[in-house]
Image (cartoon, rainbow, N blue to C red):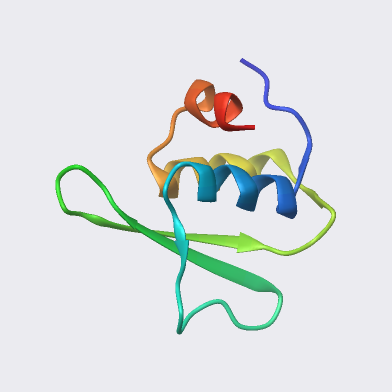
Length: 77
C-alpha cells in the first residue's frame, strides 16, 4: 500500500484519533511530541516535525513509533 503525501496537521489529527495526546514537556521548536500507552502498558512516544508536506520516509518512521499499520493509519485519515 502506498501512503499519500500528508501534512503534519493531517498526521497529528490521525494520531489524536487513535488516542495519542500531546506530551506536555516535549516537542519544542519545530517538532511536536505525542504519547499513548498501548495494550501492554508500553508508553509510545511519537515525534512529528511541523511543516507542510512530510516525506514518506519520515511518515514511515512515525508509523513505526506509533505502532500503527499503514492500513490502520489510512483508516484514521
